[in-house]
Image (cartoon, rainbow, N blue to C red; front, side, top):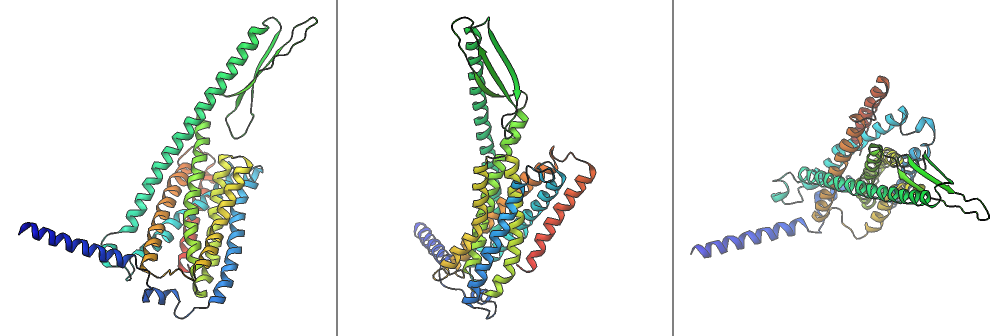
Length: 391
């Protein structure tokens, strides 16, 4: 009897779980979501398509300008990565990204996963948006740690190999012609992206009928500059992880706008997303400039960021004919992806942008510069939060 009861309860549990899963992953349209999506009758496919084209152009231009300004201006005094103007602009952009995570992405995730179209169990019995955002932030922390360790080990190994090769070349040249050897060891800056390097240049001359030259030219990392190397490594890791977080939510935003058929929904998003794209691009461009990638790598990273949201809009417009954004399945996918994006952006803005700049050695300027940076940070957060009124 007891075994039969256990089997019966297990069967009921599996049946209920299957029903909830089917209800959550249904592709059928939800009447309430359809009514909200159409904006109370504001549905016009032709007008929506025109607005999507305008949005793609505007967001592309805003993204290119945002990510391009720090990269183009890194050689100019006013926009160098250690200037007061750059620090204030980057702080404003960090506030924009923080507000994007807390006010926009997390709110959108909560809205999607608490929809009446989804079954109450489990979606309204447990705070999934906050839980998924927390898990994404912790996963980003682990990724941040592993990537930093990987690049630091790589830099140390490269430095050790080059220093060993330089020492061997110097010893070989010295023993070959000790009497006539002209050996110089000078400190040079070969590449502004790395710590100062040691250049060893050895000449060997033998007098008489024979004339020989022995050259050893190696570049090694200067000792005592481990802090510079670590800072460079952190800049590389931060720029790459920040791009990953921004790109992930840019795709979601682009798809959401692209599948919409309501001009009333799209119209306010054009200005809001252009503003958002510009300052996210500025923050990313600033991190790329501080990492001091080679020109080709910097251009590739900047281009990938700039085209992501317009590409998402184009993909969404193409999918709108057969993709149903108002189904329970779409709500679950959108809510989870928004939560993941929120967690990544919140972590990156607080840890790698705000804490790194405001609590680190970079904020060492005058009191006026520090006050300007704090004001810019709060203005960025407030400005992006205010856009939630319209979008």
